[in-house]
Length: 224
Image (cartoon, rainbow, N blue to C red; front, side, top):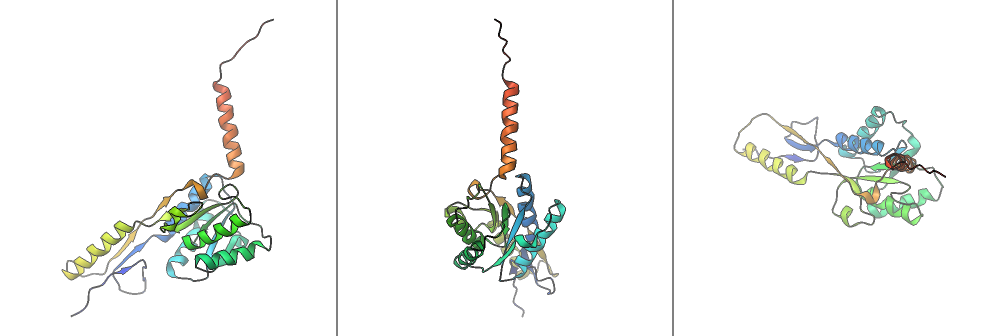
């Protein structure tokens, strides 16, 4: 008698497994789209030295989204750093010592990279999000308590677990015989602390608002 099982968080496209996975490319697409709406055109990528299928899909989503939104891909804006928060902090700290040219925004493979890099940038005196905006990935618990709080692509954890349990129950009760692949969607969890409008875009936005305000002021005439 076989054992019923469901794989989580990976699609395993070359194996006949039942899986509940995540649309990783959609997540990075959402992040790029949002940053473009905020006026960013130089968007970099923080890439983990550890390459798993989810990270590969997110990087592919980044490249495809850059192409879709007319952004010029700049390999100098892609930084490969260690996976853990402490190691990514130490690694990016060394990168900053070389006075590299940085983009105005980053998206990342995972929140751990975002938090480590945010710490390194802050220590260097770079304002987050005033000078650089950062969007993480996974909405880990420390994103809410970090300083500054991290904007990130959130995982629908409850829906993820619900679908996995339902799929397992169906397998046990033999409600379907074919293998199934369920793909969950992700949402952007916006926290203003690490993500805002690009400075030049913000200046234009403020100027536009000022002109609109002046336009609404009543006209006065003076006579001698």
